[in-house]
Amino acid sequence: MGKIKLNEDRVFSLIVYLLLTIVTILVALPLIYVLGGSFAPRSEFITRNFFIIPREISFDAYIYLFNSKEFLNALKNSIVITGVGVFINMLLTTLMAYGLSKQWLPGRRVLNFMVLFTMLFSGGMIPLYIIVNNLGLLDSYWSLWLVGAVSPFYLIVMRGLFGNIPHELEEAARIDGCGEWRLLFSVSLPLAKPALATFTIFYIVEHWNSYFDAILYLHDENKMPLQVLLRRLIIMEEEFFDPNIADILFSQAVPLAAIIITIAPLIIIFPFFQKYFNKGFLLGSVKD
Image (tube, rainbow, N blue to C red; front, side, top):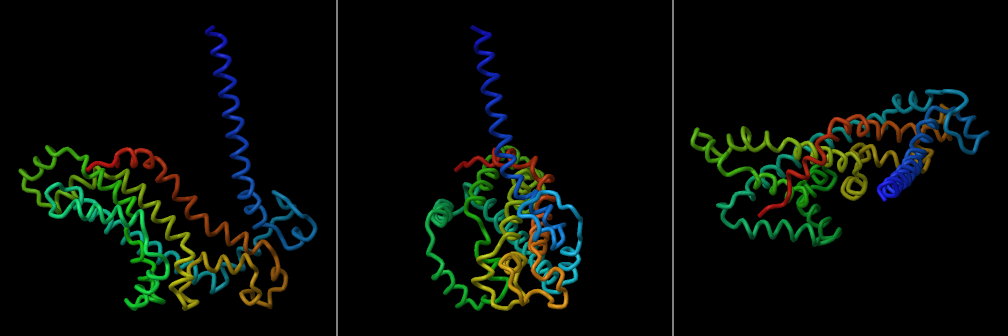
C-alpha cells in the first residue's frame, strides 16, 4: 500500500514538473526570440521567418537607439516619472497606513471605509479627466503622480502590518521618549521592511509600464515616457527613424531592441526584491 502511494506521488510530481516545464518554455520563448532578434541584422528578417539565434550578431539597432535623441529623452522621462512617482506613492501610502492603523485616531472607521470604497468603486475615466483638467494638471507629470498616488489595496495591507506590531513594543518606545515620528521611523518602518520592499517594486513596475495615463494626460511629445515611444516603434511609424540610416529603416531589430532596453531595468532589480514578496504579504495580513 505504501509503495503504491509512493508511486502515485512520483507520477503526480512528474506531471507537475512536466507542466511547469511546458509553461516555462511558453513564457520564455517570446522573450528569447525578442532578445535574439534584437541582435539580428536586417537581412536576417528577410531570409528567415522565425529564429531564436541569429546567424550574424549586429549591434546596429542598439547603436541607433542610443544615438536617438527621441529615445534617450523618453528613457529619461520614464526614469523621472518612476523615481518621483514611487517616492510619492511610498510616502503617502506609508504615512496614511500608519495613521489608520491607530485605534485612537478620530474617524478611523470612516476613513477606512472610504479607502475600501475607492478600491471597489470608481467614478470613471471621464470624471477623473475633468478633475485633472480643472486642477490644471494636464500636460504635467503631476497628473501621473497624483492620480493613483495611493493604492487602496497596498494601503490596506500595510495598515494591517502596522496594526500587527505589538502594542507593548510601542508603549516601551513611548516610555523611552519616542514621539509619533520617532516611533514610525525607529520602530515601525524597520519591522515593515519586507512590505516596503514589496510595494516599492510594485509601484516601480506600475510607473515604468505606465502608458495609457501618459496618452490621456500628456500632450507634449517631449514629455512622453518610454512606453509611448515603444508603441511608435512597434507600429513602425516611419517619421521616427532617421531617413539617412537606410540599413535599419524597416528592420524589426529596432523595436525588439527597444523592448529589451525597456524590460531590462525591471529584470535587473526584481531579484533584489523577490525574497521580500511572500514575507511582505504575510506580515501585512489585514487587521482592524
